[in-house]
View (cartoon, rainbow, N blue to C red):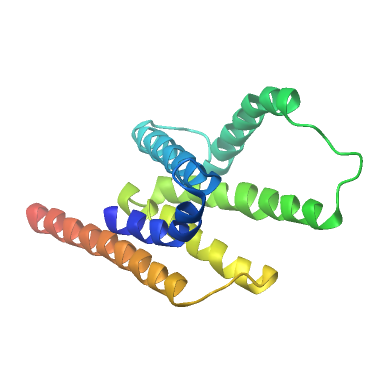
Length: 176
């Protein structure tokens, strides 16, 4: 996990250094890491609870509850502009469909069928997808630092997968 977080830090470091520790990039990084810790904790607890509902229904209920929880703060603290640009509408629509509906449903489904260690690699794959989409659609820079960060992140994913494979082999050897 430390290897993967190091790769993500490599992606965020230039903006965090430029803005300082109190800047938005570092604050965003910390908030995202805290939310990942919360998500993983919830996912591990969910793995221990026996559910009779399908994973898709469970994911829908969780997303609905999150939407309700965020509605009040959003309504109180966010101002809705008179006109919303098409690009922003498309960006939010993309996030709703792929980031929430499809992505989260796949995550819940994977948690019911795979080990938590294997599913946890999503936290490292998401920054890679974000960098790729940023480069493809918004011409964000992609250079040696981004490539190095991806290699570090992939190394973290590889370590998790190898440790998971070793654990499965140990369990199989113990049973036989």
